[in-house]
Length: 106
Image (cartoon, rainbow, N blue to C red; front, side, top):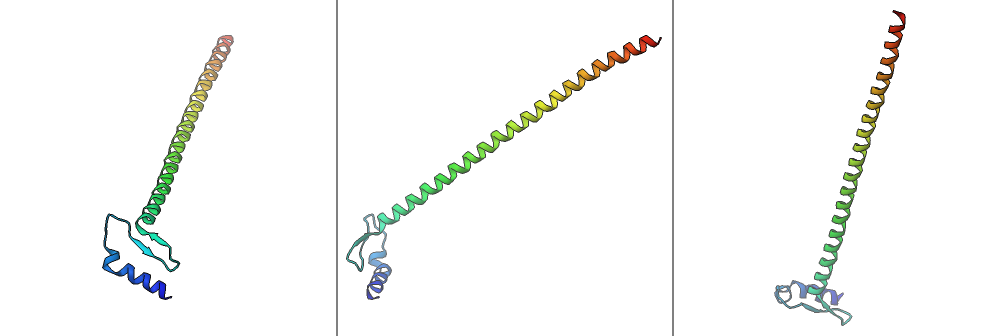
């Protein structure tokens, strides 16, 4: 308990809290040295990597959705055009039948 109080008071002091270019070294209760600046940089770097990874996944997902949408639209267009062509041929064939039928009744 006394160690954590000492650590807390060290962090609050202006000596330790001052921003410097050199890593701040604290003596923890176990006697280990903790390089606060390096730890902070490491955590920030990992957070940045995670954010970049998430951004890449989001970008890839958006690109996949765009490609799928384009493919679906093209397929719909092809289907409509194909049906229009089939309808055109059907009308043409039946027009010939109607014309022949009308000519034979005369």
